[in-house]
Image: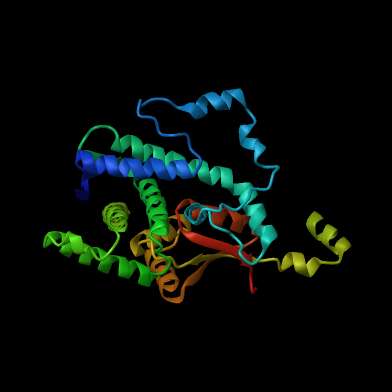
Length: 209
Length: 95
């Protein structure tokens, strides 16, 4: 994996096929959490377009009803309570914004998934889409962080230590003695890789000013 | 003005005119400092140093007030922050 660099006006990272598959899968999973249709493997299907025609008032429907706060903490982190001290303000905010936020986030995730599924080792993000790709990477990292139980800066520090320990154990062929749950290590390493990718992308974005 | 007349009618002019809300962004362990600074700079149209100062306030004090104004405007700001994955809330100023 190589972080984002500027090439011909694009931010370009390099991911091999396996890395792309892993990242594309978690991107699609996060979109599913947000209620998107499954990102198809066949490429071009856009199921929302059809349902829009079926129901031209679909986007208005939610405006009347109150929307329940998500029970999954990961989704709640993507669509947080906007007014923890005032239930009415929080409910009103959710009613007004939930649908639009979900569609903004899924659209960004879908674009990222399409770029990752293009079958090219180079992941090229157009300059004008770099910030929204960084935002989509944040959403994916927020979900991973929630699954990893990272609630404070100290938790994040501890995760780094755990992964260092695990990497050391793996490197010394001592994986029978792995001090942490392998799935946690795997998720943690994915989290770290996406953090690093996002960092290089934000650097690209900041240089544009 | 219509709003004022209506408020006087309800006997709550001061409440309406003083009804200032704030957008607060809270610290989280996920968002990168460079990213938060860039989002503040871009969305709130702040000079880089000012955006960075707000970012440090979030990181070190746990929160920073990024904007203030009528409730409807704060809803827009909070929604924008949520679209970027930042943890933002709104409340009446001074609460």
